[in-house]
Image (tube, rainbow, N blue to C red; front, top):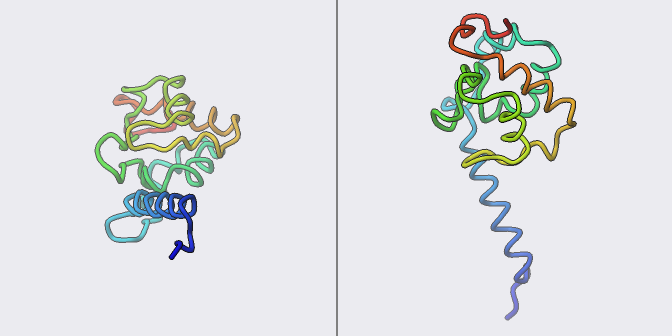
Length: 130
């Protein structure tokens, strides 16, 4: 008997399941995001960059940029590791665990969040918007 999904449908179904598993891994360990935690770093970020981050990055990188999928997803001092251009490249092309989220973002939004993230360095860890 032929499968109801067919071979292409089965591939799409399996892909959707895998994507769901990856996204589930982005959720916080207690299943909830703390508003107080989110406000710590994001409150000092430029408003437009903070809004983009909340919409496109927060789920995997956390409300305090602490990273929810391992140490490489911690963005608190990402400016020490990556330049603005390298951050833009990561957003567009993804990485080991990061999907290519730039495809679903406006280029201006990518620029805003990359500009802000590139300023987050060891010497500005206490004042992320500085």
